[in-house]
Length: 284
Image 1 (cartoon, rainbow, N blue to C red):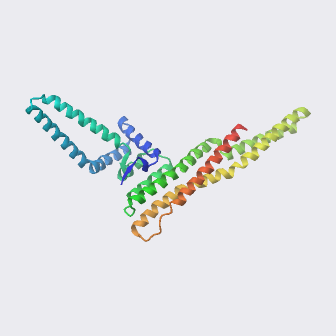
Image 2 (image 1 turned 135 degrees about the vertical axis):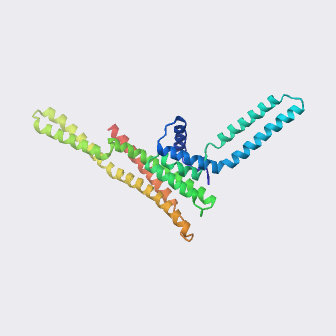
Image 3 (image 1 turned 90 degrees about the horizontal axis):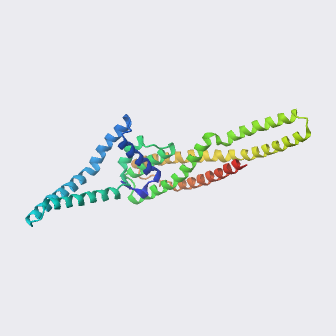
């Protein structure tokens, strides 16, 4: 199946662009070189015939144009240059028009060298499975690809939030910090005899305790975000496995992709709620 720009999430196209840039810059390791070698063979098989036909037609036009020009008494060289220029313009326009297209086989070959997170890899592998499934019609493939793209939005939001939480802004880390602060303030209050100082310390303690209560309320929300993240990845894996089983048994029930999208939308709302709560906590 030929994948076009609307079929894939922009993040996947960006990863493919990064591979192209890496190839031009020569930043290659052994695995990357093997993938590029396979890609050359795949490209030749998928595009080589049309490329040779196009080149032959252009070359024939070039020779015919120069020959006709000389018979008419025109300068054959200028006519040849004009045909050459027209061919280059056509080639550039063709490449620009097809920059955001690739066959599923090409994408499958690039998967090991694409710079993707765990969630993005799960999405990319599921896209390949859908695009290569022989038991789906073109309409079914297009529908599934759009549903997967919607799910990817929720996965990316959760992935970005998980990365920030892993940097030390998680509710658990903030809760431990609050507990330490509360213990220090309580110790100071016990050691202090001056009433006015105790009053100030008590206000600080009250504020720290209120902050701790607010953070404690975030922990379940963070756990739900993590659960949604794992569920979406496992759901995409299950979808790939279902496509594999569908090849062996066409009587299988229809693939339940709508529940995947619904869970993605719920996950996105959870991520937004946690993001808002963390922002309020930072302002506190």
